[in-house]
Image (cartoon, helix red, strand yellow):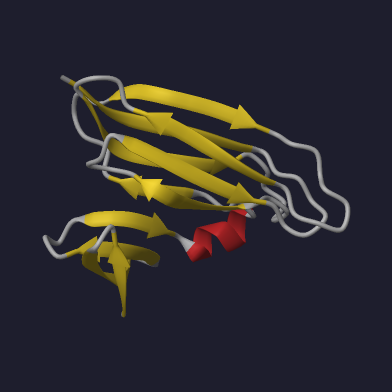
Length: 139
């Protein structure tokens, strides 16, 4: 296990059923990364939060930028909630299964907040093909 600081709150990385999970102080899973699945499928997916009954799709964007020769391609998927919306679950899905996709991470906001920025960075001299979905509650 390793400690982390997420949004100013202490959290711990642990391994549960073969997946690395980030658990906050309340015992809630706030991020998962299944390294074994990524190796087997060649996909670099990221899921943060937990889907809940009554969630709706708030935002979805699919981007497939061209590669940057001798460099890295980067894109920020940004969503700011409308009034009375709250994010519960964020998924960045790698649409390539050959291990050449990018690396996703949440750089701001996320579940429990009213905004999220997911940044995807390609491998060197490659592009990527990701779909980012944001789910939440409308109040």
